[in-house]
Length: 120
Image 1 (spheres, rainbow, N blue to C red):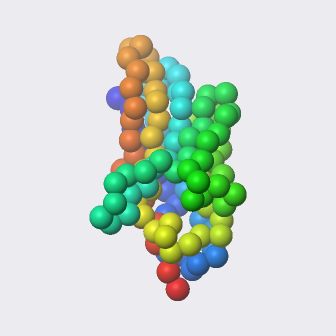
Image 2 (image 1 turned 90 degrees about the vertical axis):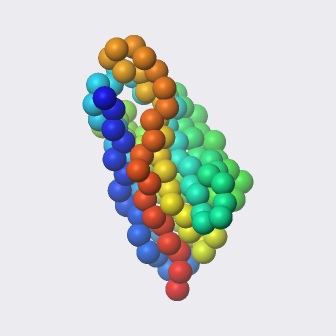
């Protein structure tokens, strides 16, 4: 089986920074796209950022220039560096990974979610 373990959420003041991490473990053969979604109360889950296995990144317009997604393939880990945080960034953040298992099956896996609250 495969598990994604997130860390790094919390409470931060507007203008502050946080770094989220998400580590994949288990019977992994290969990891393709890695990314982050977020869901605020009353809203649908929305894409924040994605990074391909080749390192190509894509960001949602509201976070461009403030958030940076990166990956460490040796550690099977994806990061989300969030700077200049705004109250509207408050949400539960979920990581996802498109993973091919050693059994050669391939699908998306999700983390448990981590709360990010931006408030003074």
